[in-house]
Image 1 (cartoon, rainbow over the protein chains, first blue to last red):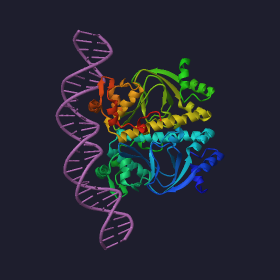
Image 2 (cartoon, each protein chain N blue to C red; image 1 turned 120 degrees about the vertical axis):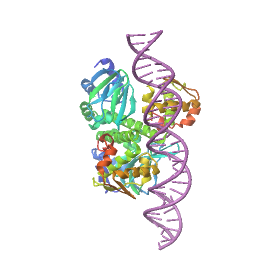
Image 3 (cartoon, each protein chain N blue to C red; image 1 turned 90 degrees about the vertical axis):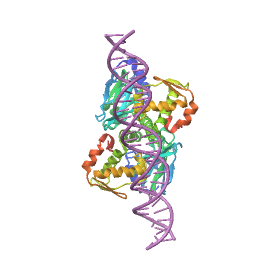
Image 4 (cartoon, rainbow over the protein chains, first blue to last red; image 1 turned 45 degrees about the vertical axis):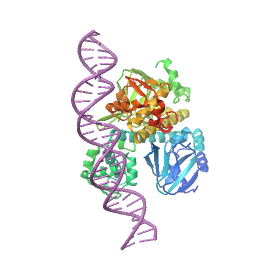
Length: 233
Length: 233
DNA sequence: CTGCGAAGTTGACCTAAGTCAAGGTTGACG
DNA sequence: CGTCAACCTTGACTTAGGTCAACTTCGCAG
């Protein structure tokens, strides 16, 4: 793999505390590849052969059942996904596909597990990574169980504004609306309608650009809570 | 704490590989207490002061938002809960209450974290424990997003039959119906109706006893998949 | 500029599930 | 053995959200 990409991988909290020789051994075994958009990387039910790290681009995690499909999460650079399946040497619970041209690091799961046994700092980093992922899903699950679709949308907009618009009230949706709809657990049609019901709360939509002109009102409706909406904790 | 309870704690996969002196240090700092039913142990949003281990009884994890409440999981002996919050030194994302008279081990989270730093085997056990919890929530989330409430109930019944009835088709519900309803993400009224729509598929309910007389038909409706319904993987 | 196709929107309609209000069961306790 | 209080069930009704089909918008290739 290209040495210019190494530092950003090394900088990941998952890798930055491990021993240099172990890191090198992992990278030695790894493949760095660039994939076109809409390419299936892993399929749920398959044994976990690789740990994946998104270096550039964007990856969608999704799941199937009952001839329905649901987007479970979007993975942005630089972060790893499907760590749990690799550690447990189990099958993937989710499928993954690229949503943009993406540069991705593939580390054979056997190597991940053997270095995990060898390197104590790596093992500890894994715990924290897993704890973070766990809490992310718990928050998603709480949102889905306790909120209406309009509330979920409102809170997502408020979060995006904090993350991408720096609280200015104007930002771009990071993905298309059908994906957003699936992520929020609704149909594209219903997302459209949800945007309309948010119009009186100062939500202006034009294509993929969003403007929030009355954040206070939106918050009254959304009732955000750090126990669901704060990605940090 | 009573020494007769030590072996079952030690036998937990979370604790069975760690060094003896570290285990003793943890237990030295821990409290073993028996609580009456319906007692609140932790409240979401509070800082994680203790790691909890259910030795006897039953604990419900639940969450609040929008003046609604949802049961997130039931914890049975012998297992630990809210590990992630303890490790990250963060606030609890869920509340917990006893659902039966319960014997519970409380380990101060500072001690957990310091032993985590000290004991490599303990750190590795934590990774696997977290990975298991992560995959549990992912499965719950998939079920909620991809299945109707009747399907969720049908699959839960099939699973209970495997776990408690050993596949005989007859077993007791492990908790009351309102709890089951909340766990499945529906109202008690709707659970009643769901049981009725399952009647033609050989589901007989009398109080808390369930008899499945046509498992094949039930499976046709439930369409179980190990990627959601197998608690082992 | 034009025309095509995908993505998004809208409206009409339908269905699953929630809500509310009675009843009915059951089980603990006097 | 009766009474009370949970818990559960049922029925009538409402509502959120899904479905289907038509239409619009927009980006883009020719």
